[in-house]
Image (cartoon, rainbow, N blue to C red):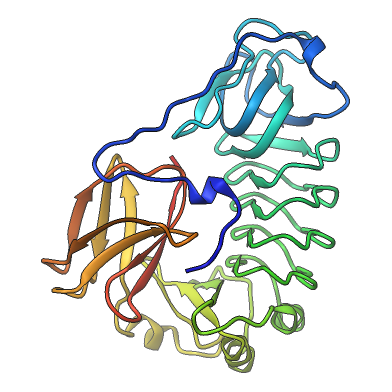
Amino acid sequence: MKTWTTSLLLAAATFGSLQGVAQQPAQLSERDYDLTEYFELTSALDVGQQVKLYFKGSNVWIDLNNNQQFDEGEQALVNTVNYNMYTLGSQTIRVYGNVEEFLCRESCLTAVDFTHFPRIKALGVSKNELTEIDITKNVELDYFECNSNKLTELDVTGLNKLTLISCQDNQISKLDISNKPVLYYLSVAKNKIKEAEMEDIVVNLPQKTKIDKGYLYVAVLSPSEGNIMTPDQVARAKAKEWDVEAWSGTAWVDFEGTETSLENILQAAPRLTAYYNEGVLHLSHLNVGQKIMLYTFDGRLVFEVDATDETLSIPCSLRIGYYLITNGVGHIAKLFVAE
């Protein structure tokens, strides 16, 4: 199992019951903060509507009306199990304090500014309306995801601590991943990366090992997919011990290249699939009689049960983050719990 330094992704989960407790420190004032160190969010939502935020850290202040005064109700909940909702007093807000990890989803963000907050380690802004983002000054990042926005470019040069980059479902045409020695998770599916630009990605993939593989999610098996990855490029990525996969509509499946027949891929043996909803983990295409083992991405075993049927629904409480599920040799699924 791989080492994942971002505790957001390694958040401990308990099987059947959840012990997470939100931490809320004593009331502070704006005088307790360095007002030159902040990040800024702008939403298309109206004043009075709510944004969906998650913080890991301490003493976090959300200036919800952007008046640089610490008003009642502006102290953020931190280290919680799920996202929390915050009511906008202004369409542009600023966040101050000790923030190690930050996620904002489905909040109609149209602009963000993280240039004044270089020390953040994990950042997620998926499912918003961003057309650009500058993270070049956030050199401590080890996790970044911006799926389902409207980005046409993404600059991650100089961010050499990144282990995960997920930018699927945008309009990106190239991505420079050079000098990313610890990168092992890269999702670029549903973009506009053509053969020459995909070549740059393949060349710059760091070498992995059979017991420490990389994961490359490169395409959606749909006419709308704009990426091109040739069979030769796939073969060379796999030679570097990267699993190369495409989304079939129901599961991630092995990808052999853009020239591969879609029909052949969809007829391939089904892989273990997993999704989590309302406290229940749903699994299908299980190997009956084999153990089902759920791990955090740092290799911590959360639980194990026997696969008594090809399809199972298992009640459990999982915190926000990424997980690995195994069910016998070579039968692996990745799971992201967003809330």
